[in-house]
Image (cartoon, rainbow, N blue to C red; front, side, top):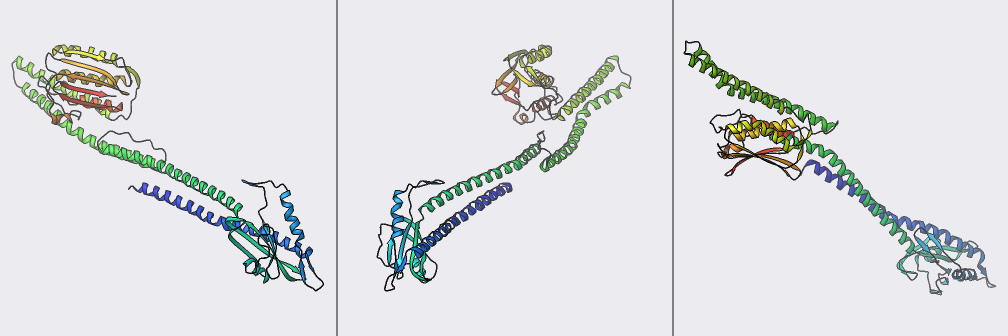
Length: 476
């Protein structure tokens, strides 16, 4: 696995772990905080009711026994059904009071129960809220499956009823946590949704940063691989940043290395290709120093002219190829009518074809392509001339142009000797050539010229040899 992919996975894992872990901790803290808030409100409510009972409902009889009146509590509870309660608390529609109030005497016996008097007369002295309050401590309890909320918890807060500073009873207020559960569940769900959304957004940002960083690196990698394969790749435009500086450094290094290799190859090739004609010229020149018949003198002079023209043609083609190979982009881009371009090339090559006893045939659709008209004309001229020079006498050379998908294919087919398998992959190499139909050899630059022109047009060049003939094409 690539280091950048590992970094991305670690980043995404870290984001999800931190965000979802934080949400989990917050969700765990929500419930106790809500319970604390409800308990604090119940403390106030129970304290106020206990103070009311202490001040208004506690008396003594003739014997000195303490009596606690429940009349005011009963009246208040009985009046509740006649009141219209409508309260919109966020998402909660509250329409009834779900609070329970009970009152005990000094020994813990229930003397009032707002829940239809269901536990009236029972001994609550063992309940923790009543027991601790009678002892003078803070009394509170939470009971699961209490009749007023069988599906959950009910919280009870008890406060002392006082008479002359003594505890004479306990007033407790109980409230189910069903509404709290609704609030908690809604908030928890919102937290998880927000947390997951936040984690996903953070992960997407991580992916964006990943692609922002890795795309230029991928471009550099493809560029380096293309250069290592010997392709004339164009350096990617990464921008003015650190990665872009690396790309510029690679391009400078490539140019330096290519320049050195280019010079070495051309020096070797020039030495090899010029050796034979220079030797011929030197030999003819030495012989001309001797007294010779006019016929032989003319023969040697013709040989010098022929070899000189060969050297001159070779150098000119070499300069054209060097200029083309050093280009990174097209200098001229026009819309070209392919059929008209082919007809111009055929007109120029017609005399050569007739001298070889060949027929030129054109099959071209009325299609157009964008490119440099001069370069494409040169490429097509080289293909046609090469096909004529290697065709069997009296055969036919066919030029065809057609649209294949979104690209244009121009092909030249001739009937001649099959190309050996070992030579197929070398035909587009510089200075590689096979004998022509008349036995002579070319410079080996023409097909290299075709290949470079195709590459400049972001296309490709191919040659195939079958029993039906040699098929050369450029696809742009």
